[in-house]
Length: 84
Image (cartoon, rainbow, N blue to C red; front, top):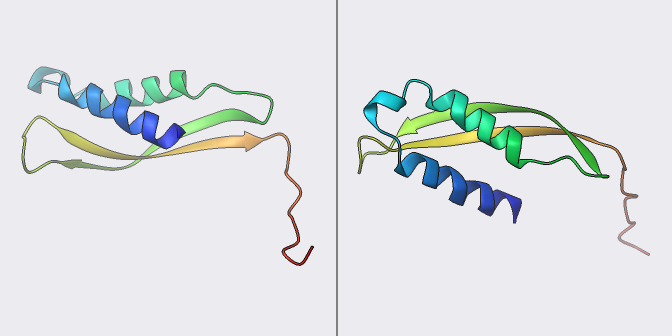
């Protein structure tokens, strides 16, 4: 669910990007993800990394981002044995 939300929000960010703002768009994407991924009792946000960025062939002003969000897990769930 979080992935879908982030994809929708990032595509909205891309929709309003113009040529003048593309230079600092990476920083804006990172800042946006840092703000939206809120830490909770199960994990703490660590960092976000842009893995890949591509221009979309259909539109010249849109870019597709592949990002990685690193978190630190605070509570490790016990692995369930499949034979139980």
